[in-house]
Amino acid sequence: MSISLNTCILILKEHHLLKSSAVQETVATKMEYVSYDSRDIQTNTLFFCKGKGFRPTYLSMAKNNGANCYVAEQPYPEGKGMHALIVRNVSKAMALLSAAFFRFPQDDLFVVAITGTKGKTTTAYFLKGMLDQVDGGRTALISSVNDVVGMRPEDSFKSSLTTPESLDLFRDMRRAVDNGMTHLVMEVSSQAYKKNRVFGLTYDLGFFLNITPDHIGPNEHPNFADYLHCKLQLLVNSRKCIINAESDHFDEIYAAATTTTNPDSIYLFANESFENPNLKQPIDFRFASQETDMKETRFKLSCVSDKVKDLKISGDYTLQMIGDFNESNGTAAIIGAGLAGMSHDDCAKGIRHVTIPGRMQTEMTKNHGMVVVDYAHNKASMMALMSFIRREFNDPKIIVVVGAPGDKGVSRRPGFSQSLTAYANKAFLTTDDPGFEDPKSIAEEIDSGIDHSKCDVTIELDRKKAIYDAVAMSNKDDVVLICGKGADAFQKIRGVNTPYPSDIVVAQRVIDKLENQKEHFKK
Image 1 (cartoon, rainbow, N blue to C red):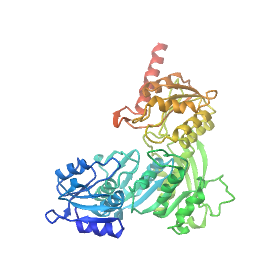
Image 2: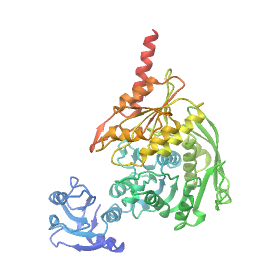
Image 3: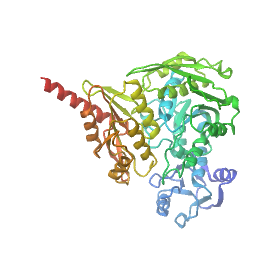
Image 4: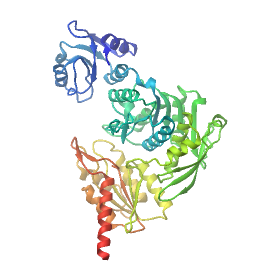
């Protein structure tokens, strides 16, 4: 693969990004590799000088390693002798030039994008499970858990970002196309738009699941308005839009969709019981709970408007994931499958046994009740999870292990305090990706907002010990919720991904140890 200097200049001019260019006659005018990492350079590399922490020495390294052209928002003396493309916004430039370098792989895929404060990952996995039924497993996935770009084992790998940097995203899309993948389901975070990771990308289907305050802080969004604005850009860039009519800020969400999409291509879904007298648009799909136990969730989906009467997806569905909130996620995914051409039987078969690492993974113990590992990591997710447990399992004692990340998501901390006060009987506040912050200070900040007359609190920074203590103190009718990290096998500590067994593995080890101790004591 390659891209010529002239092509780069034309693309940047077309999008009014190019401020100036410097062409060196003695340097090759074709770039055969692209990178934003000075350690990952090949001969004739197009190098992007991006990020707040960019240092000119990185450009020197890239040049010495073989880069022949750089893209930056200002000229650097360190780039003397290289082609230079000086642009107004380097992250936008990287997205556009990366798409061109990898030969616009999005044109060869049916691209589905999902956003929302909670439920993105679950919905994405549900939809992939269904599409795999009809395309022979050729559905690629970009998610906050794993990325899948092919059908071989080496084509599935742990993701580092919910939505990758644009260069990595288009590279992975090209790899997916070359591997014969026909569909792509991807999570799109607010940061993806804030940092132009998906700039210039249009989706065949775009989902808006919900919105509550999150990711607001010094290193993320300055306020909720900015967070919502970034989320809404997904709908502006989608050919068809699927929206949860129960979402807060619905009027703004719907208005954003109509800026580029005809109302005939905007689809609304809601619970059977949802009524909003101010809603002017008809609901297209309704779902209704049927039964939930500790292993499965069963619900019914109905196509109720004339616009969707020809879709063959009405009927009963079973999920191998508990939680009425997953009925909403499942409904969204089924609608997407229907709009992609699937019918009820294939949808029901495809979604039936989908599980997601670290999402609502439950373990029934003999003596310590039910242990649930979930990625719930903000107020909305915590409230939904604990209210469901209270409602469905006869108001059990709820013991929660949770922490908040450092350096980001500062707005989540009061939300944790509020949700624990509302539903938890006991909380173990612990470490969860503290970054460069003091984990004890984070825990104390959450603790300061908890009503201790309603929720007893222990601060235990050793996450493995916190999980052990939580399970050890529980009785057979209690529920232990281990929230935040799910299947993540690391802790982010001072810029280093420090190995950690994952909540799932730790919980299983604790359960085995406690159950074996009980059996030994009986003998």
